[in-house]
Length: 174
Length: 178
Image (cartoon, rainbow over all chains, first blue to last red; front, side, top):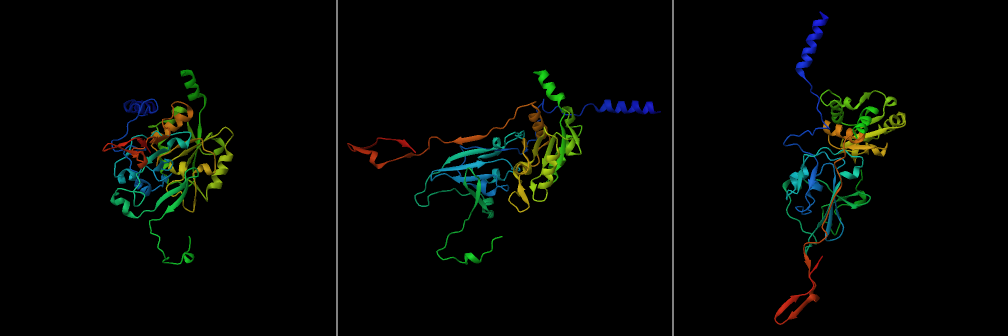
């Protein structure tokens, strides 16, 4: 009895065959709409920083070195590959690639850095194109003021009034 | 080379300890997926153990939280000396989406030294296998930092002093790019 059941089990096992993937030896393709690591195309980027404003993980940093040069830095550490940066990019400079084999021993391998030339407006000093409606969601935009320390500062969009509307001292900081 | 490879494959079996210090369980599911017969990671001798004292490798998921950082450090200290730490997922690599909140200290490398990073939210099981294969030495890493610099700025800068009148025609002598 037990012999026949073992034979049956062996037959089932033979019929099923081998299901294990031969993965690292053989590449494994991904689905068509898979979102992997975002790739930044510096030739298309206009430096509007819409991606930096919309990144939920705050992974894209924007920093103005001088009036002409803007640095856009993608760190890639806590990126969730959500694709919002690619959605809001007005020039389609960011593409979500199929690249997922990003394991590395050095976390700095993941970063992408673009040094962009920004033209100088005679009136305002900096010109932007119109960004997409997602940009108007009033998300907090961050810039960081120090490239080496990667320290964050909050970028306010409010205009500075000559007289303060509220007393600054009375605002409680949480 | 094949001998070297086999030595690396069979000579050292990595026993992994699975430490979650406050992740969302997504990376845990992917790690357990890796251990299933479909992505059979026991081909490389990798085995899940229950105690950090038996482990060679610690798989960290989730950021270092204020509440769990001390426990994570204790688990790391309990591992015997040649030890590796894998940070799996965006939380362990960089602190996750809530990296700047009160309870989150940041990536696990703030608490314990990390040897290999596998980013993704969550990483595919293939990505985890790839990270293990990079660590064991079966394959090479694929990513490298990308830097783009515009050395020549596209708009030329005009200095009025360089404009010279030359019989009814203005010649611009020095064409300097910014």
